[in-house]
Amino acid sequence: MRIRSYTFAALLAFPFVVAAQTREPIIDMHLHARKADYIGPNPYPMCAPFSVMPRWDLPQPIETGLTSDAIPCEKPIPAATTDDAVMNETINIMKRRNIIGMVSGEPVLMTKWKAAAPDRIIAGLDLRITADKTHAHVTRRTAQTVRALYGQGVFKVLGEVMAQYEGIPANDPRLEPYWALAEELEIPVAIHMGTGGPGDPYFGSPGYRARNSDPLLLEDVLVKHPKLRVYIMHAGYPMLDNLRAFYSLIRRCTSTSAASSTRSLGRPSTDTSRALLRPDMVIASCSAPTR
Image 1 (cartoon, rainbow, N blue to C red):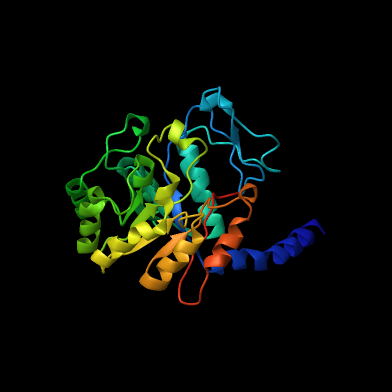
Image 2 (cartoon, rainbow, N blue to C red):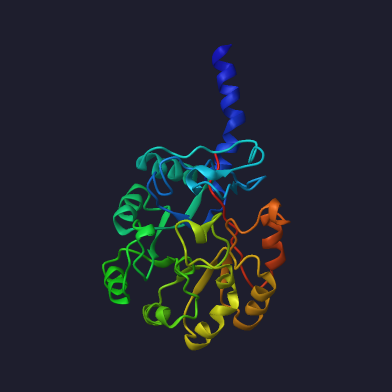
């Protein structure tokens, strides 16, 4: 009788196993390979989404002063404590959800992640163009270095381009060598244009400015480089009207809306994607993996 019960249970579960294996893949255009201490020794729990965004108690250092007025969500996700745990937990979720992701990071770490899940990961290259002691985890790279790394097969997507955190708008002349290189070699580019972390200009990214989220800053870039392929990480949020105007003119730029809005800002992220979605374009809305 027990054997029959197990057999019956297995038959009931079988359709769900088959469905998980055969369903269409999720293309996540905004994932990162990071070390466990990427944002410090005691990271804040993650919520997807946050019901209440954390606040910074200004008289205190942000490491200890970042708190919530209420429980941030029903099931906060604690941070992994080791580098291997960050990688393995992320890859396990990608396999379970049938996710293929553009995962960006430093070349050494990306090599490890790519080897662990070669069929799941499209390798990206994080890019900063100025020396910054507060972001020692991301190496400053010249266009010549980027060319060499691409020639070695280190990455397939140039991004995340973190110029906004450095105070550099998308149309700044300092980015021109990278735009020209990407167009020449037909490398897709992923650039951060949108929200940053709480207190970013005061902690870690003194050059970050919200005004550099404006998608129209890419307009002259794409006119000058007609073969360039770009997608906007964070969808230029909250400047959605400018993004609509941009799309109507350019019509070859895709955006992702990861962490682009929360209830505390007035609308859930699904509304952001719905506001942008049109039949002639694809909007990829991605978020932190959840268990």
